[in-house]
Length: 497
Ligand SMILES: Nc1ncnc2c1ncn2[C@@H]1O[C@H](COP(=O)(O)OP(=O)(O)OP(=O)(O)O)[C@@H](O)[C@H]1O
Image (cartoon, rainbow, N blue to C red; front, side):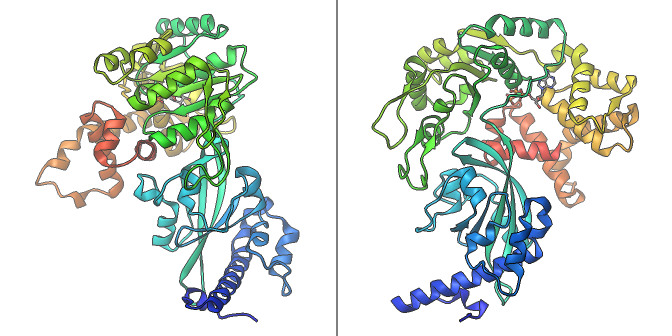
């Protein structure tokens, strides 16, 4: 017996009604998913199992289970109710992220982030909120906490509706963008300015030893790239380099990221998770923005560094790991010690071999070669080149965001350019626009200037430029001021630049 689709929303009062309601809901969901396969999933091309498609949309479909329907695609996919409850996962999801216990309808934000409330109430973007507001399919780049560590995941949310047109569920398809745990691709470090040659010579001296290295320098100067170069030149290069981004971590997140947890250790711990300390065994542990670790967590980190032992959350068993430590920070660590914000004992453990990263404007002669290496990384098919005059403009410009800012600038230039040659006028125009965005900020505070004169993107661009300037480039302080997470701030800067 098939039930009308819009009964999905009915509320049951007795035990029998409850059982019937569950059946109705399952039928509704199955029917909606069949529609999704018919209308939408086919679009995913080779990622779809075609034999399953005909099973699904044929008149006598043998697939009656939400999970089987989701199995039509080979990408990890889940079904989430509008109340954030995960109701089904497919085989690709289970093999990528582990099996979820769905009996108690776990919430998506607890599974993907370990949060106890929706992502947008925890300073993150919520892909579902956007899909719900627009009623349309949305795609968002989201950071997920997976058994392999933190990963950038491209999330596609498709709302599915009942017969009355009300959105009841969302199909969430996940594409892993970047695995932060390990990379075996050789890193390219462009540059030959004496200040940078000094860095490279320190790298080759220290790489082969096992001593701790700390990379000091402004944001975007290439600290993570140099950490990878050290790892790749070391005897540990066959094992992973594991990155932990230390800013903005709460105590629970820090411990679960680094030490892992057992199944059921806390709400949302639906599977056992290996921590980064274990993933780094035999390899390198890279602690990015180490100066931002709160004092109460520093002692736990110190213990791990000194003894190599740790205990996963929820476990009574102590484990051992053996990694090479590389840290990075934009802070003056010694000043942090003097301010009482950083432990002296941890400072001595970390600060064994400091490498100072020069600002991009302190190695201006490297700008053309770095720009060229960035343009090369955009792919051989669209090989962009700068004219000599355009190179000179870049060399003379200011780059407060260092190589990262130069990279974003060139990406924008390549998108706006019609051919493959990036010439002086385009670079000049973009540099002027950038100067206006930074310098035109006062207009925003001018009472005679109406906000509606600007597009929202322009307003946001000016707002973030002013915000960063007001905080002297300290992104953590800027994010705090704006009431958003550091990750959201980074995303905003990337998308608006
Ligand atoms: N020598 C280089 N040549 C070409 N590109 C580089 C070089 N160094 C860094 N980059 C690029 O610049 C960007 C910023 O580098 P990276 O993330 O290593 O900086 P960072 O100092 O660690 O920044 P943050 O402190 O904000 O994390 C990256 O996109 C990286 O690929």
